[in-house]
Image 1 (cartoon, helix red, strand yellow):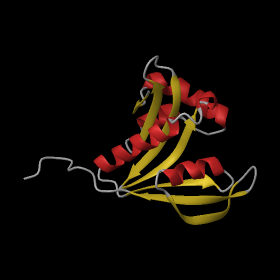
Image 2 (cartoon, one colour):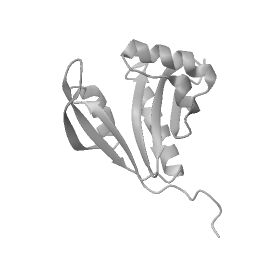
Image 3 (spheres, one colour):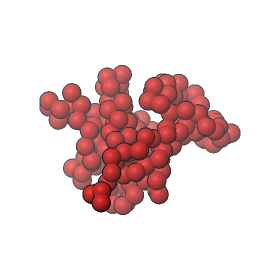
Length: 153
């Protein structure tokens, strides 16, 4: 079982370590301090072992998925799917209309994961990434309206 929760200061070292391992530039402590950031942590529900994280920003009624990483030894076990599912629930509960992301065009595994979760390609940014230069594929997930956020009068 995978438990996805909001990250806390106790998760910062695990998140920053994994980010370095997979080549992401993440500052978990800074993200925790941003009011528009959603930093989620995935842990093994049985033993509490760290499995991965997700960072997204919420602006107006849209969410942007910035970073998603799974411990290399835990890949293909549903961690990323659990984190995406949790983000979708949060976005819907906050009245989000869509989730956007960018991914390297060559990252077939990530693109397949996002497509499995309903994201669709909406644009391609030529030569967006560096080291190596590569196109970015921009994807969007349209959200169904979530439950009301307050009492209905």
